Figure 1 (cartoon, rainbow, N blue to C red):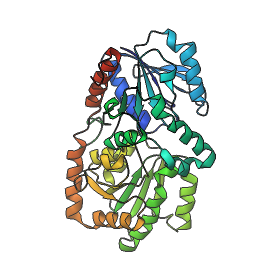
Figure 2: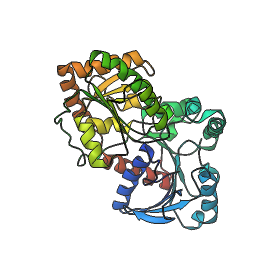
Figure 3: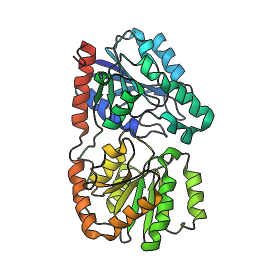
Figure 4: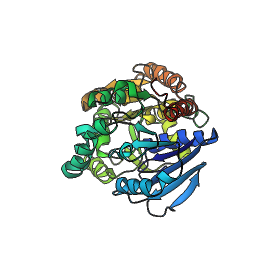
Length: 372
């Protein structure tokens, strides 16, 4: 198959996150399966307008703020003439509305819908822009085959008015060969780790507030924060205001080796996000032998086996979050059981299997047999 994928960012973009990891891991494998894949994404400083990344041809157009308009122009002016078999519309914040523009079969890919939560991240003006665009999805994509990454996202798509029979769940995965898939030696001090982008909607400030409570019971506890994002200055200021400078470390971007080392050394990872499509960082922490205390939020609840790979707490409940972290840090029997359960849970997710499922789904969309 000749496939063209539209996504706002590629894996090398400075603001790339879980959606870009998902796209790259699955579609680079589809290249190795023998398919031709082109990714159309936005430009960023220092990047070339086109290059080959793990077999995928990456074409960069427009800017991050204008990509949706640039994508439509590129398709109508260039892409539609290139004999693609399938268009993959990665619906990320602002839908590209490609079913309205393409005579080639279109498959939508949805991680999650922001809904009203976008206002907590983008403010009233930009948030309203995204919200209005999302409200168009049910009418524009009503007859479009859709792939989602979790049962939570499937449920919210159905609630938004998309037909259930058009929606298929293909989970995120990991590459087991990259991770230790074992419980290794932990840090000397009781250590909590957050790993992910530093965005407002991810509520990293909740971890910091809960950590202050944890320190009352476990004064020697440490918090490691891995990742970067536009909320970093606010979070650093908050840490300083609470007088936690000596026990909170911001690592910024971490390469794969450093990330695995930090996740493996932590006693517990925390994911406090308001909502996600899945929660790939939960599985990656588990693959390093580290249990996760996670908000019981859409997407995240799908990537946690509660009581097996980690523990869930009600989103926004700082006291409960702190209590769960103290439980894991102070109860060695519980921590050991969750750590080994985390490894077994992580073994059930594989990018290879996700890619095979995606290949089959793409073939069904191209042949017209999807859902039949």
